[in-house]
Image 1: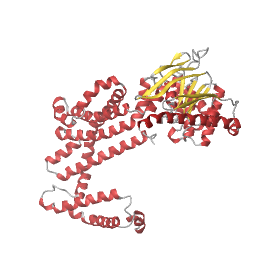
Image 2: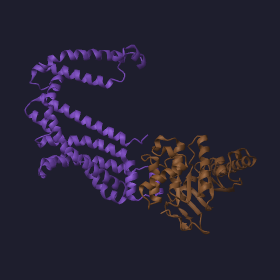
Image 3: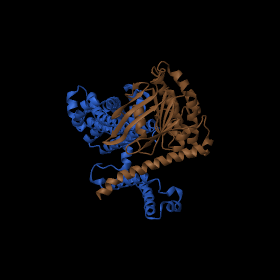
Image 4: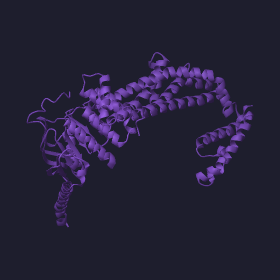
Length: 286
Length: 276
């Protein structure tokens, strides 16, 4: 039923794409842009058009295999409808997930940054910790999940712990590398001013390392979501990963796909927020 | 910490460089430099790029350690950087994540540790006012022109209260107009504070206009070619650039550098010819 409701929508979109394709084959960008009415211009909208294309392919496949099985491959519209209907449940799940995610994320960033700065600027600590870090950091953090769940008394602690591990290493490694490589002229200036170690860390090494710290946090955030959702697949009673796993068990694939789509949106928004914070914090970078 | 220096009086004041040598990765950068810089003197280290003049300044600052020889300041051997010697770099003297005012306040927090934050903020604006930057106190360095950044760097050096100011081609990246303005600003500052200034440059006219004495450095390895006392009276005006004495002196210095380069080329090319 939903597949048919979808048709008019799709035909409008395909007309759009047809215009786009003839444009690509045409003359240089500027001339092309002038030949078409403003609303139909391709330039600057490539990203949106690609997504439209993906949705079209998705629609095509789902309608082709629609009657062969039971909603194993729900159409885009059905997915969005299901997403809308499940939104309260999903939002609640997000809440549960973030209650675990945010404290672990914050703690891992704090530890990663502080320890990274110390290790990066203190040769003795570097010699002490580096061999351990080199051995431990490459271990894929998902491998800890079953043991963490077995070892720790509650699921929340176990999930929090593995999120911490997933975020800590990228943040620590990036911070330590950045702190070791603070540009010479900043270090010279700090020495000219006679800054003590703590002042140097706070006023010079930390801000100078911020670009590295943010790339560490970027990687860490992605890991955080991976760790959390995987952990929830294993043994949560709530949360985003649990939502997907639950409806997979019930073979309710529209809901499951809606859950995946929703999780994608949540991660995307989180990364956008991080990007905003980064831009504000690094305003001084040219 | 920067309380009026305890050993800045008496015959041992000033900077004494004794048989200084410095090598970097096996290559000799400075060889056998001996130099005296008197208290309150304005000395210019003049030489082509690669002559080790920046290295010499870093050694004076205590940012690097000499391979051989010693440097005394106020009778004490220089072991590392000290608030006794402020430095102005060509770029990058200010931290880009701090506003101009915060940069100065950070310097004040080291030179005037007994005072609180509001005192520092107030005095930071005094120092900025002195270099014509009062209205830019809340600006971040990356938004300022090169000339304003160097003004800020001078203000910071003044805020450190160091009796000695070491300047590494501070106006090297500026356009001629700003360069001239900042040279005059520096002369004003020097006239009113009587700090000892060591000024590194590769610009002959700049050296002649500013300094009491020009120390000419030649390269490969860096060594002193000659020291020239500048006879022009102070306060100096830009008119001296056209004066006969100024032109003659700058030609003499150019000639000495040319001679030095020729000598070096000849002495280097001899073994090559023999090898062929």
